[in-house]
Image (cartoon, rainbow, N blue to C red):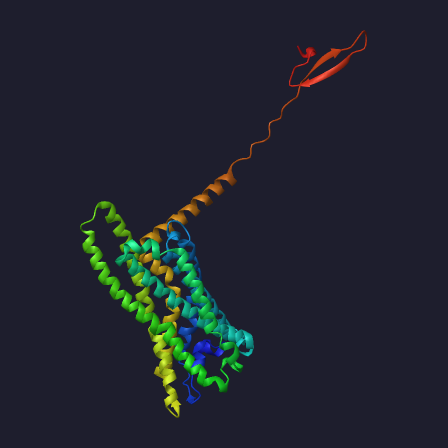
Length: 368
């Protein structure tokens, strides 16, 4: 199924029913597009998500629970892009990860875990945006970083345990054992429900609620003082960025899950010939999904004014530190002062026996 599927088999390899009798060869154009864009998305998205994590960890963004949720999502996307890049490298350089039993299953496991975790983190961000707009008095109680950390930790444990099935259902060549094919088919539907349909339902309902709350908040804003007006402006800017993040998630992830469900529906047909259009649609849906993982930083920077200000300030601070370090290194070295020590002699003793004592910093009597 494309150059990725030939190398190590992402979860999409586990969605093909056994009655698929033929799969069309990819056009050279489709193969070239996939060959080019997969490493581009990985090499662009991994640093971009890393920059986003660093920016969200700086003041004043690090005091918000939504910043923590987006930081974890960026880390999850980094893990998924790194997994994708390794699968691509396996296909291009003939590393044959699909022949290594634990490595293949780890790739499939990580693909499921990172995808599901990112989807639910987006849902939590959407819910927090609604709370900030509709229940401003409850923000300090509900939207706290400690609660976000506890929810994220619990959710991660549940997802990791729930998606551990590739380790005990996998077979050779990154395909499930025949005895577990029905179970894998059910898990694909479950994964689509948990990763796409349930989060999308929550996000879409929340977006409608956010829009209504935004209108009510705007009406209240017209009667507020200038101080409250500034507070409203900050909430508005954060709302816009979170809204764009959630809408982008829905638009770029929905085609992939539609493609997976369509493949699973092939179980109802005795003999299946997948058309060139269907295979091309699956490739395009995969690339859109990978694109959504790589463009997080662009969305934050374009639509988040506070994120943009924090990132620019961080860059300027680094530039000032580098300039200062260069100036320090370029300062001419001052030669050490050469101090000539002079001594003063004092005589002591009785008769003809004298002892001379020398004290630094004083002139000797003979020098006068």
